[in-house]
Amino acid sequence: MKWGAGVLAAVTCVVLLVWWAILPPALDVPGGREHIISGVTVINPGIERLVNQSIIIRDGRIEEIRARIDSDPAPVCEGCFALPGLIDAHVHTPPSFIVGNQRLFALMYLRYGVTSVRDVGQSDASVVDFAASLNDGQIVGPYMYRCGPVLEGSPPGWPVARVVDTAEAARNAVMEFADRGVDCIKVYNEVNEESFRAIRAAAAERNLPLIGHVPHSVKLGIVENFEIQHFTGIPYLASARPPMGWDYRDEDIEAMSDADIAALGEIFIANRLSITPTLANHTLRLTDSDIERFPPTAGAAHLPAFWTDSWKLVAGHPQGEEAVMRRIATQPRYDAIVAELHKAGVDVLAGTDTLMPWVVPGESLHLELARLEKALGSPEAALKAATVTSGAHIAPGQIGTLRPGARADILVLRDDPTVSLSALSGWTVVIANGRRYDRETVDGWLARYDAHFHGVLYNTVVSGLVSRLAKRFSHRHAED
Image (tube, rainbow, N blue to C red; front, side, top):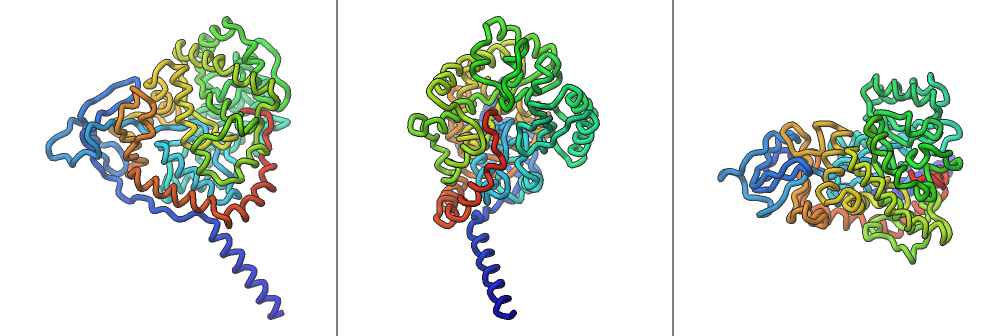
């Protein structure tokens, strides 16, 4: 018995040592939340531009924005620009069994100037505590808002959804999530009309934004006060739903006439609808179709190697030359829909669908902004989507604008981002929830994470675990 106990103790020690070794290095969250950012041009996209200003931050909030005075500290950089921190309105957080990747994703968001994210369908219950740790300043990264589990009907298209097939179950789920402190409610493809109406009423009662996929049984003409994710419901206003398991298909977008697209604006305005289109997500998935023809983006190099294979288990991608060419050919059509909605006065938010194939945290929002620039007509309009508009939908008055009382989320840039979005890559300081992060520090942390997550031990231990468990999250056809 003593010999057996000794073996058990030794095995336990080895397991604990291996577990400790695969955890990412600890990063020190900055402590101070009082700063003066002086001598900057303040840009609130689509609203105002204020030259040679100083931003006074107290206890993580913007206390004042005023003209620079002689007693202010020296500028971070001469002639720099201050932009609200970027907001990614549509992300998914890795589940906890993918050891360390929640922290990796959080650091990568910060590296690309993303100071707020909204998790729109938690992968597992660990997201609740992870979001709290981010928001309390225990972990380096953005502020995280969350919708909790997706609400879905039968059969569920989202693998870890809460199934609600009756009005009573739907209402109870919303009330439960609200009591647990969610920031929004998300619905999915197969929710029936009775359940959807109950969800909508309960969400309104609890003052929670309702977002998600337009359920196929409900259709676009019935939803109201709703933030549509992707292009769900849009091609099916007057036609049959897509096959089971699909959110929407490229061929159905392709089949829409110019008149169909022109009619969307009136419907969106009348029903108080907005959209988070996740345009870049469409083309990023082509990497899974043919990795040689559509190579990964530069940011993918920061992710562990197992993602290359695991993404094929998690979500679908165009298969075969016909599907690939259709995906490419329909992108201008998607852009045209967003352009038409924007012209009609519809709110367009910026989101990426991070965690889907090759949608790299942080970097993908820059790619989304490039697509939005085409659709909305200018860099400033795209920036407004990722700041002012997304902030107004997610946390009005708290994020998305540089104003007294708002949370201090600020990007300090050397070049003017309203002239070229490439300026976003050249940030020198990011303030996230009042905490200052210098570019050199963040780059150094990411280099440490690169060494860790590409190490032999991490890849050996975690890759096998992920490949076995990823099938739980299989979501083959849908775009979310």
